[in-house]
Image (cartoon, rainbow, N blue to C red; front, side, top):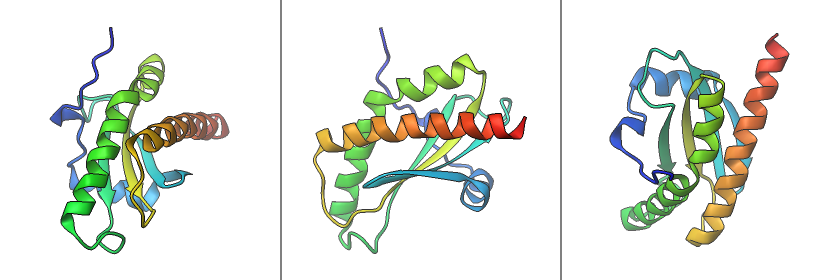
Length: 135
């Protein structure tokens, strides 16, 4: 039985981690979603993956629209996070991820769910490739 939750301990809030994420993180895109991610030391956080969700004010002028998109992205992540967390747990790694919305139009929750699965799999592939290259 999977727990489809997104508790506060899985929210990325650390300013230093966010700064490091944007300065040195790798990115993948599954349009209209873009993810920037870094591995973090295993002792720095409780959750296997901490997530930051961002929708630019430049793309959606009204806060109502930004909040709607963020809600849909959170829901898509909440239902599919098991893909990323099981992989990270099997390798005993932890990760910080920023999910950015890069479209100017609203998309349905079902569409975002499909793109979220694609993006999470791309994160896993790229992270594994980086680890193999560093060896």
